[in-house]
Amino acid sequence: MPPASAPLTQKSEWHALLQHKQQLEQVLMRDLFQSDPQRADRYLIKGAGLTLDFSRNCLTDETLSALANLAHACGLPQRIADLFTGARVNRTENRPALHTALRQPHGASVWVDGTDIMPEIHATQARMEQLDRAIRNGTQTGHTGRAFTDIVSIGIGGSFLGPKLAVEALKPYWQGNLKCHFVANIDGTDIAETLRSLNPETTLFLVQSKSFRTQETLDNSLIAREWFLTNGGNQDAVADHFMAVTANSEEATRFGIHSDNIFPMWDWVGGRYSLWSAIGLPIALMIGMQNFRALLAGAHAMDCHFNEAPTEQNLPVVMALLSVWYNNFWGAQSHAVLPYDEYLKHLPEHLQQLDMESNGKKVTQDGNPVGCETGPILWGGVGANGQHAYHQLIHQGTRLVPADFVIPLTSHNPVGHHHATLFANCLSQARAMMAGKTEAEAVEELTNGGLDLNAAKTLAPHKAIPGNKPSNILMMEKVTPATLGALVALYEHRTFVQSVIWDIDCFDQWGVELGKQMGNEILPRLIKDGEAGSAGDSATDNLVTLFRSANRR
Ligand code: F6P
Image 1 (tube, rainbow, N blue to C red):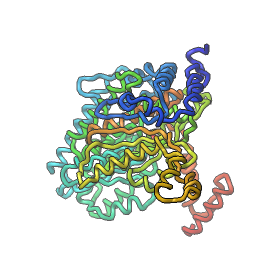
Image 2 (image 1 turned 90 degrees about the horizontal axis):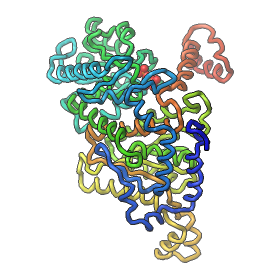
Image 3 (image 1 turned 45 degrees about the horizontal axis):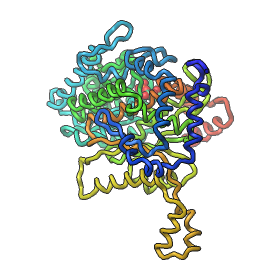
Image 4 (image 1 turned 180 degrees about the vertical axis):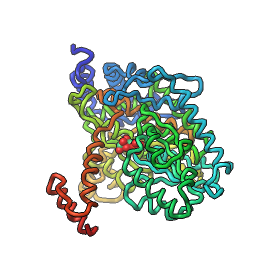
């Protein structure tokens, strides 16, 4: 028997799954449902206010225990303990990844290098609360004494997607009349269109950047400051209108942000896991600190579930193992996240960064090739809209696309029968993916509709739907701060568990660095006077010339 530390694809548990997959290949989910009336109940698990129905998967009890065996062979319980206790799980950057500490309640202690980090986390939350209150009751105003009406969050990647998701998802909890805008892109249209409608006297800018070195964020912040200064603001008033959330307070101060207006970040929080920190300020300012604390509490409840629930009852673990199952044993190349809720429309974007920046890696923690596929392409969009667009490919295309449907049981907007119709659409999609329609059924349907047998047989292959397409349905009572917190934390842990199976570092992102580096080399060639010089290849040089002539350089 290979040792416990054998590479993933040489583990006996991996081979057991390969064999098991062969047995399951000819089994249809619709038959599994027929032969087992308890199936729906057995594959329904709950945690932290969320319910996962994973009965519509190519899976039996044997599959589940074989996947659980693989997880244990990969050391999952120890790796979970390492994550929560501040071990340096981000090995290539030699750091812990302690986003879970950000949602720990008072009374908890989490140690990093001999220091309990909880007092600083809670002190930062107290400052957020103070700011929220002061803006709300009008004691903190713009430089002319007028109350703030708009906040502009300038940040990109993790310093943008999580806050944007939560602000939009929690719209029913917005308090007061504040409006929140997000500027991320270096496309000038983003900042220009945002500033167009704003009044500098009543606008507060939050510069959100862990590193305070991200070009998009810094350039947009400079434009915002220039706009402020040329529209009635003055240098002293910058302190009233610009705040920063960063781990690099020196650079923020150099930018002109008053030290009192700098909220801390820490190197043990990854950008894509940072919405729980002061990066969540736009959320807190829009929904109030009490609701922000409920968001943290929901995430913490999911942390507890992840820590405590047995493997086969553990939502993030089961979802991660199912993803590994399809990714590595059934050849799925992508995974769809389909929120059936308008408020959750930005969920796929946030999860895309979370999952793909985390698990888009090809070497193990030791730097050896992983030896199998890693993170699938995560994509998706809001239902039912997607049904009239890309669901066709899921139902009848040649590729396998496992999907997560995410739907609340009740709506914030009970308009007519809309929510029942939405729910029916979600259930029917999952059922159609699972059961499909055989050619014989299609023929019968067509002949019953009056078509002659020959014509029905010609049309039937087009109308037949293979079925056996896996999906999960993830439900919550309602989209609330607590259930949203649990939902996002669930996907964070799902991402982590997959990385444990593949033995990759899900907390670094070296791949994005090369593009940034090359961007810095190309930019001067586009804007400098005189000869551009070569960027190193003729393809880039040609387009540099094209750009320069279009922009008269
Ligand atoms: O582009 C990658 C990235 O490093 C993300 O991981 C991060 O969230 C984003 O850039 C923004 O970084 P920062 O918060 O340092 O500006």
